[in-house]
Length: 463
Image (cartoon, rainbow, N blue to C red):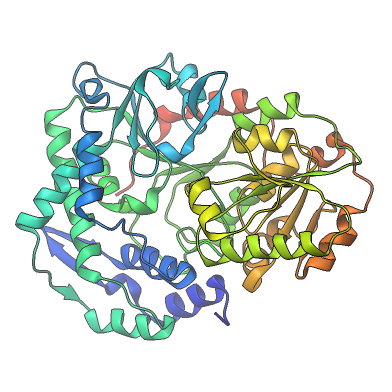
């Protein structure tokens, strides 16, 4: 990919009238460019579409989790629904905590229902920290049935422009599947809001997977706040907009980790939101206090990633290890892929250890962080750890150079010998590294969240 994501977004959205790509259904007109954009760029980067493959096995997995806390949807009225993913759960003190929403739930007296997508991971109900939680399966299965029965043919206004954009990006996506998913989301959420006690607010971790939901909530008069879960920058297509689009299917507010993300969303992107709230990260505040001081005999935390770039990063570290006189300990932390799957693909030496702890606990007990382009690159700094990014296919620089490039404790490396020199350097003090990252992750999460909660009554859904 010769051009960066930011360059491609600018070229497409300044050259084409993307707002005119529409479909009509349910006596509504939908701007569908954002739906297509999210999937096109995902495929461009990772080589495959992000729509979960709807095989018999995947549908069976949803059916098996159908009764996971489903009664919580019906037995009470909640002030907030929070849409999350089981991948966000980490083990803390014997319980599995959702690192985005469990803490803020405690500030609202627990009156928050977590609606959890359980495709990649599922945790025992009695071992999760969340007071009220339910599987997202009821929504997903109803959308799947409705989409297959009632949503078969679509008319797209300006369909030729979609083909031009696909040629520009040199990749194609399944337009019918994208339309079916988002229209089914909209229709079924309208239905569920008539059946279930409506919340006052909706929190969400990944807005660009829920365009249909967002419009349904807004039409019901329910404001929506997205909570940052990963990288927000000009090279993340879901947040970088150069075209002015209707706000009816975007969040009203975005709660972000730090000032850099706030500055980008308010000054550089035309994403149609009302405002941004900087809250930081509760998990970072917790593990910064528990972390060890950086040592001489370095232990290295490696945040693994899925896809071709993640595999190339592993090969990079294995090549480094062969040529390094010092055998450092590499603590590997998978995201979704299992240890067994990795071991079937790679021959790891004894000093490559799969961590049994969550990523933050592992980071807090190591001296250095290495990753390809995970958000961990920034989180590691706030935990007091030097952050090294393996710049494969220039992806690390695309994602992080703007926000981390000036930090004295961040290093972009191209070849294994670069890493040999870095690891021989004296380790900086934890507090010195942590303070260097205030622009990316703000401290004092509790007070920041309370300020956001106090702001909620003033946020009205923007259509």
